Image 1 (cartoon, rainbow, N blue to C red):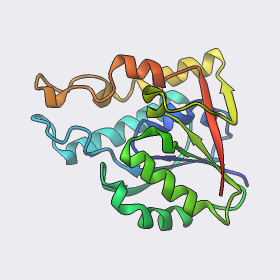
Image 2 (cartoon, rainbow, N blue to C red):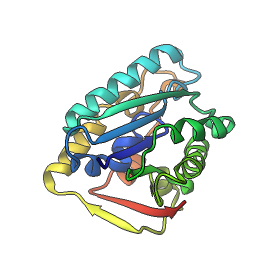
Image 3 (spheres, rainbow, N blue to C red):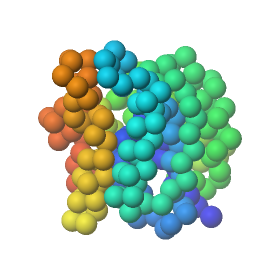
Image 4 (tube, rainbow, N blue to C red):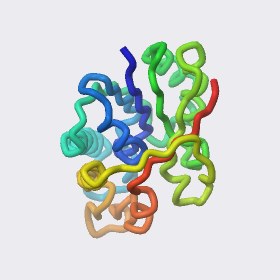
Length: 209
């Protein structure tokens, strides 16, 4: 059975990169590989610990998927948030153990510039050889940085999918709203950045492996 495997460096990347695509897949055919739990998004926070943030972001993902209307198997790798660059070999081995022949595999873009995204993209390309012929890179931060200029395939979301994707992304309150008054507790994704990344069109670049 063919599966859609979405490899997300952090909770929320799966919705931003492929929320509409996941909605198109039958129940049981979606696997989300959660590389990190996003525990370092507020490393200098005065009001939440990394352990508390890990729990919160996992809970947010569960709610986001419910809002999206997607039933997915979530495989958590537990890699260190903001530390994937030093884990490329280990991540590649973990991903190779998950992927199957015939999977459609979506992952972050190497153009995102975020160190975790670039490391995961590199690990995924190495892991996918032998299982699939191509990995589909999907941009998030590359849209913000203006480094994304190419796509092999684009998916236009209908009104229902677009509404569901926006509703799902709003579940990630820890990333979109201040956690407290201290600047260290400010939002990770600012409104203008979210408006750039959250679009009624999903784009993918086929990278041969």
